[in-house]
Image (cartoon, rainbow, N blue to C red; front, top):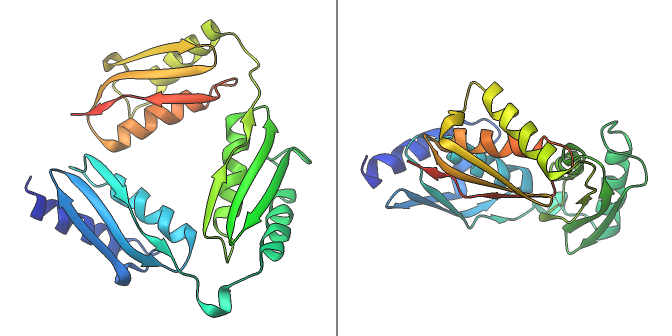
Length: 215
């Protein structure tokens, strides 16, 4: 597929996604690598744009350069954002009470603390992504290891085998302490993302090095 044809696919995908105001998003493509520029009104839209482009067939890589520019009536003080972040996490049953700390500086939210599961770490970040005034999120929450490396490897391989989206035979899994390394090749960004998510679902995993190639 030519870069011009891929660019048209990406533009169509962005226009079709109702959660994105694509009016101020620029798209360029070189050798299958998509560069997103311009600005959006919320951090959630920035993430949605990247997620939408990843699902487009033919995309080999993404350079994310979109800025978040909140409208004047949506801008909040850092202490207001922090208070709202703590409140929304308190209502989320998947996030353990008192385990996550919040710091906000110029709209950028930094999350820290320790949880038992990766999904709890991701739930905390997801909860604050959608808040008004958020310019970005740094997720520094640690996942406490609870299982041995051998158990992690077996559980990830089993998860890959169960997934209908993944050709598990093309993926090699190695575990070093609590770090998982995925090697091999996949057919699409969707399959690559599914394999990485499968690795993250196993308790005790605190880092995933995704070396999978989209071929």
